Amino acid sequence: MQVIWRTIFVFCLACTTLRGMPAQTMTLEKLLDRLEEQGAEVKSMSALLEQKKWTDILQEFDEGEFGRFLFLKKKDQVFLRKEIEDPQLSFLVIADSEVVFFQPLIKQAQKYRLGKNKDKAELLVLGFGTTREALEETYEMELLGEEKVGEIQTWILEMIPRSDKVQAFFSKIVLWIDAHRWIPIQQKLIEPTDDYLLVRFSEVQLNPKLSPSDFKLKLPKGTRIVGLN
Image: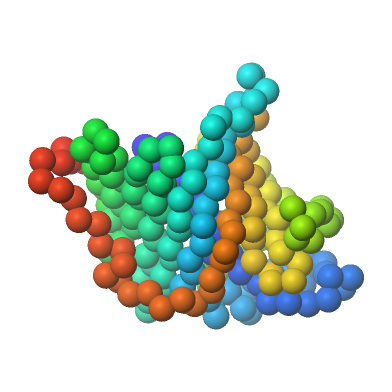
């Protein structure tokens, strides 16, 4: 279950968006104001996804995973879909307050309701019209400066969860925010063990035409359902 919640949290971070402002005038306060003011403008998103896991004791990354990510906010509902295509096909979908993680290779799907996991609600705080007050209540934040990710100039935002429950998953979260498009293009989710997940998004499209039907996951006959409630 912890692996799935890490994945959900990556989704949530991916949907945090900002509008442009001259880089030289950026402060943490202005950044948080923009998050509150402009976050509601993004109703949907699609992107290519690359993620890899760093194991601190081995001092190395795993082979990584590649796929695509979809997000839709419709009225008071949030829909998420992550498809890993390489090296092994898998799907994670959030729709109608239900999480489904499907692994075609072993014909198994894990299902559970978000409503019965309220203690993990803090993992879903970022990116869906969250207020500045909610962010400041949930995280200690610091704007660390600028850095290039590939050829893209970014601002680095460090976030430390205030809650022990959230820190059980991630002791620290770092976002690299595109200084021109004002969207996060890379995230680093650091675990208490100093292992971390590094996630990068590319070919990002904001507000593409998506509908709830894009988040329907049809399970083939013979799929074993495992309930996590």
